[in-house]
Length: 103
Image (cartoon, rainbow, N blue to C red; front, side, top):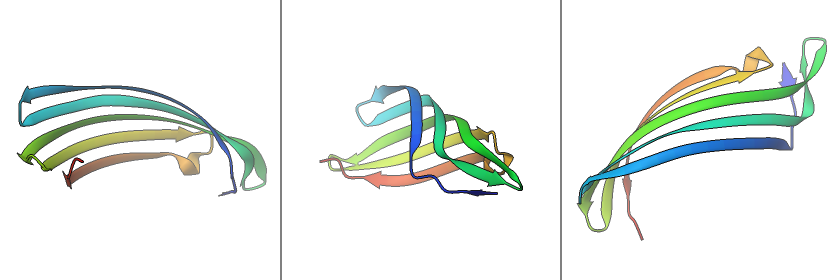
């Protein structure tokens, strides 16, 4: 399949929350629903269609303050994307560890 799109009409709904457990430890969670309608067409074999994707993601994370100027972050995200063109369907599991320096 082949697609060439410069513009996407995207509608997104996100619900998120966080909880401060201690002055140094915070938890986060949420979910995201996204619908993308692509402006151009995609060729799948001999069929040309307008592509539309629907994705759902859920995430959880935690932050720990190491110093007043440094935070440790641990996050997990699951994402599932369904498209009307099956070549663009996928599922992701992402675990990330990071450091943040708030300004």
